[in-house]
Image 1 (cartoon, rainbow, N blue to C red):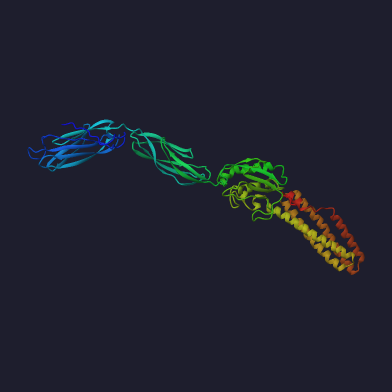
Image 2 (spheres, helix red, strand yellow):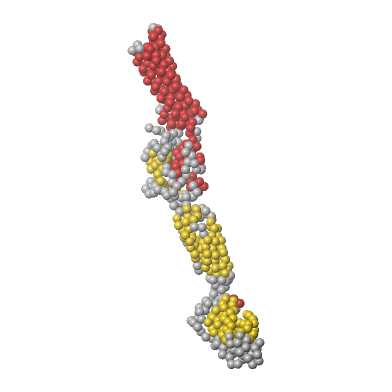
Length: 518
């Protein structure tokens, strides 16, 4: 056996990399003893060259090239044995025609060999050759994020999944902490073990992401590497912040409890916004602040609010996308505390994106009767009272006409006006009685008394109108004494009527809990 010389073909490679240079044996053999199938006296198969990298990475798989030449004048068939550091890697029989060569390629996995110098030995039946190579030191475990699977768009409070392929590029197994961070805030982490030069897939469930609308940088990190992706978040909060500053302005004086009303209403939505609006909200109530997110203004009256007319207790914009610099809420002064409170809750709900068809219905309904106890009946009582006042006024006008015609001895005309007065006062009596009855059912005692007193006054004057009519009829028959007696009776009823009061509608509204409209 002859020892061969290594021939360098390039620069020395770094540890762990496939070398760009190789060790080559150059065998110049003088007349070896042939063994094989050739004729006696012929030469056999010679190991002419072994080409290997001078440096092999730990656990690297490489191809070793072996050139076998037939230096004889007859074809030889011999067994080629391939060993590394005494460990046989391969043994195979080859045939090479006379004067020709054959290249044999052997793939070797160096995972089974320790770091350090190793001898590569190739032997035929006629020749043996060997070269040296160096196996580099094993690289420590090194983890990189190989692949990343993340949804590009998520909604606020949504739970979503992330999958990451983590590869160990080192030559040793190891454990590493893999973390998921969104804009540098860690949302989940897990330790995983990965074998050398292998990958493992790790999955994460990111629960209830509470981020505002915007683009965020999501990263999956190992101790030495990270891979990021843009994450788009959609949030129902149009303000893009969790705490809103609330101010209060008063165009007209509000009730003394206004601050309590505001605070209770704000507290309601702090507790329920996430359930109904889909996101958490907090309020910072600063009544006299200038720079506010929500401004509550107490006003005397609201004529229109969008397309709504009539009895309007409050008004606010429906804010579902981008919030204005200040969301303005108007609340009418003068209503009962509990009604003002429910109205303010309703209007605050609009500023959180809730419409009239949304839950909670008892707060967000556009029908006041859903929010105010017996609202329809209360309105009916007020409407009946107004109708009664209108009929009363018609009756007074007709009364005055009847009296004037009697004084002018125009008895027929006086009869017609007295009859009209009687009818109008009768209508007033009926309407005031309706008011009283509704208020009694509502157990609104003071309101019922207002209706009853108006009914009593109208009833007395109605009887006076009847007497005026009777007087006009008597005068037309020439019964002047009877006519005079009827006139006296009419005046008595009128005087009795004056002992009672028809209160202004504002008094009734106030007693029923409504704002007083000028």
